[in-house]
Length: 404
Image (tube, rainbow, N blue to C red; front, side, top):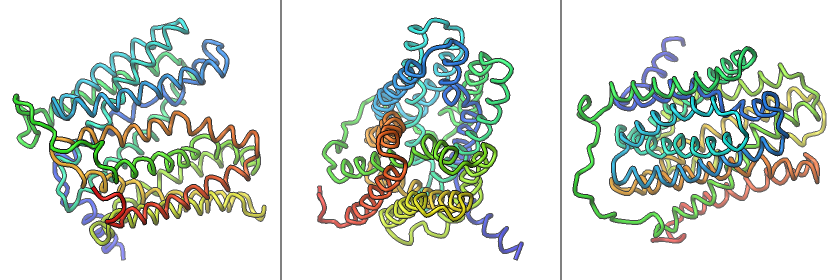
């Protein structure tokens, strides 16, 4: 039994290219220093004494900068290449983190946060396109899953270390975040620079014409709208759900933390072998639809009668996590399959923007619904939206739907 399990994991992680592994390691180093953004609101309210409204405005500026960064990063990918955009974003993003830590006026923090987000988020579409380049078509979904694993592990490490560091000195968070960006840039240069790695694409000096614009791909644009609404629902995981667990389920902070950690643990243990077993068996939209349906069930479970709050919370998290495992890797597989070599940046930009835009307004929208109509209405609403999205994802597979 143990040998069969080890063999399964070996096969699930086998066959991926060296470039895919290096990219994931770069992402792990980068995300392990992610400390400033999760603690920014606490930093502003406690360290500077600004109101929660002013702190929220700063985070909205970060969201706006993320949207601009995703669009500009995607455009640059198609002109100068994914390697140079990643390197530029990591180096100058790291420098901007350290500058932000030295700024002490509210206006200055607003301006620096906005430009930091532009630099930082331009990395995302470039990294997404790079994964497509280094991976093989038959294991592309697993390549994206490996990258997601690196992101989840990095976030877990960064969050834990950030809490410890912040308890001693908030200003150190900016130095650690900046330095890990620079370390990730150094690792990217050593392992994947065009002069050191033959697999890295070098853009031709003669700019190729874009063969097909993303804005003419109506089916993809509909897909992006569906992704945006799914992300609006999914981001409740990091905002309204923990508060709901505390206020309505009366769970301890320790237990809430363990439930949230369960999400990352399951992803780390089971996503790669799940994708390995499913990849290529059915169209990506089938798995996306199934995953979104599981997420719908997860929110509906939160409205169950109060039999045992702890069990309900764990069950809801299990459904949400396995829904995430099914939906998100295959979302990447779906859109990348619609691209060609010289327009992937456009597609990656819009895909990143849909998540950035949802992250900007989703938490606030959820809190508004909960505040005016109660959590029960919020969970019914979110569950219903996900149910409709699951239906539309399945319908999107129909070749007659907005065919191009």
